[in-house]
Image (cartoon, rainbow, N blue to C red):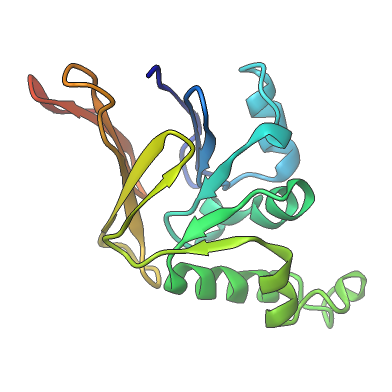
Amino acid sequence: MSVSFTILGSGSAGNCAYVETAEARILVDAGFSPLQIRKRLATLGKTPENLSAILITHEHSDHIAGILGLADKFHIPVFCNRGTQDGTIWAMKAKWDSKKKPAFAGADGTEHLKAKIDWRLFETGASFEVGDVGIETFSIPHDAQDPVGYVLPPTSATSPSWCWNASAPRTSSSSNPTTT
């Protein structure tokens, strides 16, 4: 299985990575506006309409800014744990407070925001699959509700595994334990 991994952006302005296999197109974090993510994907010849999933590491705005616009509009499932979901909902409610921005009236209720996204919740430490990609989760230290990193295990004995956490992606293989 061939795996393509591209950093669309990493830093305080936003974090987002794109992973593609034969059966899956995944964003790890969506820390830019939906328009900015669309533009960055376009540089790869890709579109958000074809995404299979969005994996969220934690609820800080530089990791979730595009979640609602992408997940709701294109019906993309969002994978995270309960703490990250709660923190994301809280952040969205604060951002779209209808008292501050009347145009968002009705969009700032917890249940309304939960219903707009196809949440796929997991327990930290659990594994799951998106298409042909097996994904392992692990706890990381960070100032968030329950931040996680993701490991995409190697697809063969000679291919690297991919590890993504809140600060940087890493690859590893048996001959090269950790490189950045």
